[in-house]
Amino acid sequence: MFRDFHSASRFSGQAAPFKSETTQHRDYKGNRMSSEEIVLYGDDILRKPTKPVDLSNSDLKELIEHMIEVMREAPGVGLAANQVGIDKRLFVYDVGEGPSAILNPKIIKQRGKEIATEGCLSIPGLQGDVRRAAAVVVEGLDPDGNEVRVEADGLLARVFQHEIDHLNGTLFIDRADPDTLAWVSEVETEEE
Ligand code: NI
Image (cartoon, rainbow, N blue to C red; front, side, top):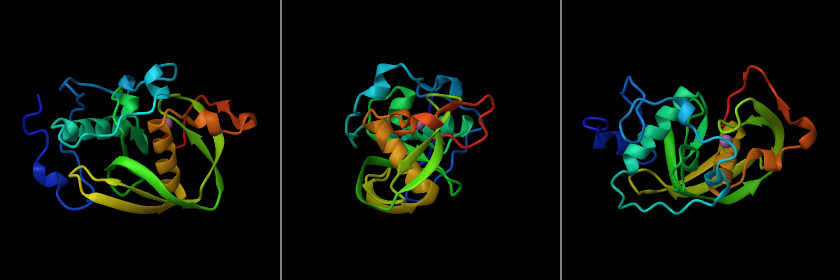
């Protein structure tokens, strides 16, 4: 089960990155799991807008730990809750500065445009060029329920837009330039 699986202190501090100390990857119910448990393209849950997170839900932090483990195992730079089969409006991300999560995220500002190649853990092996805002400001809640506001550009801005799309039932293939979509045998770029 989740005895000692996390400590409250790991989530203290506003938007502070937190690390899992587990050596085994465990699923939401405590079973050993792997990236094979990521929901794949074709599943309806990827196409439905997710429900706002209820902060009174005591399983929330376990869910976030689980999602970070799945993201790390994949490996990926972002993961939305519906990608692990959970209908909740939250995502986790890690672009190299430690994992973090945003609950009930909303893009409140965006500027510029940038085209870059994306992939998705729910559509393994497929890549395509997607045009997105170059910079965004996202508001939401951290795992403790504190309001956060994150300004992002570059890869982080892209991850935020990709994951918030997931939470709205949108996939990168909906936005990708169809001429650039291609299956790759070895996925070398980071997936989101
Ligand atoms: Ni994705």
